[in-house]
Length: 101
Image (cartoon, rainbow, N blue to C red; front, side, top):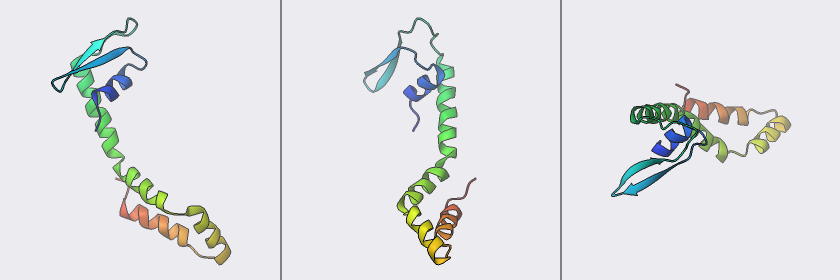
């Protein structure tokens, strides 16, 4: 989940600010003298934009988790030695399971 912190870092890189957490409510304290404080609307729009980008990459995160379980170097070596397609087949199966939208 994209947070207020993520949006602030995206909107105003290297800006100086803090968040005070009082009764589960974050209050933004802007201490930067070089960059202007973003408006609530700008922050909310950035949270929505960043969340959409994150959500659009779900398939890629799922693929990576499956790829990480494979011993790909070993599979490619064995395929070369045995004239097989085990590695390509495994990658194709993962891509079929988690297609790119």
